Amino acid sequence: MTVPNIPAQRLKNQRIAHSEFQTAAEVASWLGAIQAQDYASVEWSIGLRLPQSAGATQATVDRALDDGSIVRTWLLRGTLHIVAGADVGWMLSLLAPKLIAGYARRYRELELDEPTMMRSNDLLASWLDGETQTSPPNPLSNALERGSNTVSRTFSRAELLARLEENGIVTKGQRGIYILQRAALDGLLCRGLTRGGDDLYRALRPASAKTLAQDEALAEFARRYFSSHGPATFQDFVWWTGLKTSDARAGFEAVKSEFVAETIGDQTYWMPQESKAKNHDPIHLLSGFDEYILGYKDRSAVLDAEYANQVCPGGNGVFYPTIVSQGRVVGTWKRAFKKGSVIVTPSPFTTLNADEMAGFAAGAARFGAFVGMEAVVG
Image 1 (cartoon, rainbow, N blue to C red):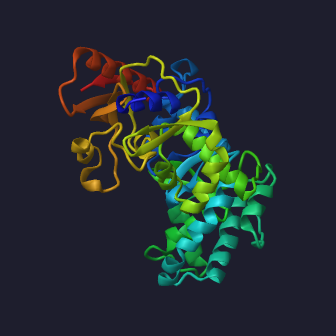
Image 2 (spheres, one colour):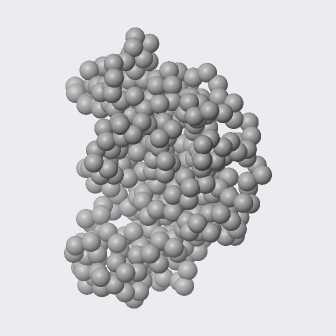
Image 3 (cartoon, rainbow, N blue to C red):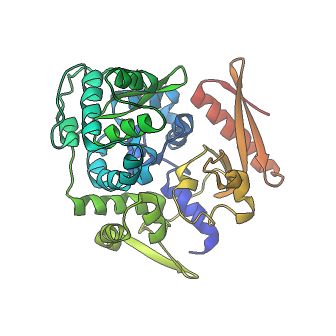
């Protein structure tokens, strides 16, 4: 393997170049977790990995989020991700304690002590479930054991914070979002669909109560990551998970024999044993924050350093949608909705050739089908 074909391998393993998946949950399960701070972006990240024959649309992803087969919540690195509902229980059990401990200083600065957090949890759970309950020693276990017949309500962030204020819990400044995030880390709630541009919250009701011991969970995280993101380095894996290096190492060592390694320069890349790349479309239109870009600490294999600022201006954490040609990022694109159509405009780093422009038009048409509108290349 040489550096130029790392992109081809990643396209295949990330299931961008081809995919056998039929549901959003299968995509989420394969990738392990999908960056999801911008919901419209993650919708397309999932849609791109479903074959066109599956007829996937935004509504497909929305239904999966609504029925709990996928869940949007704070997980890896404390940022919003979408994961399969069947996985959220063991992922929270593994990741949440470290995240909560890491927020201890911020909690103190905001004067959010444990009694306040537990009282907030009690109130939030009662409103979202439509029933009165008290917080058990392990709120996550309670969330996983709830019956599927429990009525789950949805509330906007503003509605929940207003209710907390009415019950004497101050939510000013950043207190409110940290209270909601803590309830999510304790397994009580998750993000739902949007209403009027506002994110809704609902009770967490995983598709299954699957649990894993810590060593099993660490191994499964490593298995998912290198299967779907390989070729990737161990440093990429540590960064992606946000785990302590020692924990990440334990998980990696448990599954390392399932993968093959290739050393290029001073970097060792790990990938599935059957990782031969197949022919693929020359152009792909990726969403902003797509795992193809965000899933690695070192992105140089697919993105030239000279163009990094055009993908994430000033390193501000906001990643633009990208145009990928033969696995490499060659530009950005944007969309604008107008009178029942979507205008898809490319901003290539250099001039696209005729085949690439034809590929861009095909990618735009596929995106238009996903959002249910005619696509017009701007």
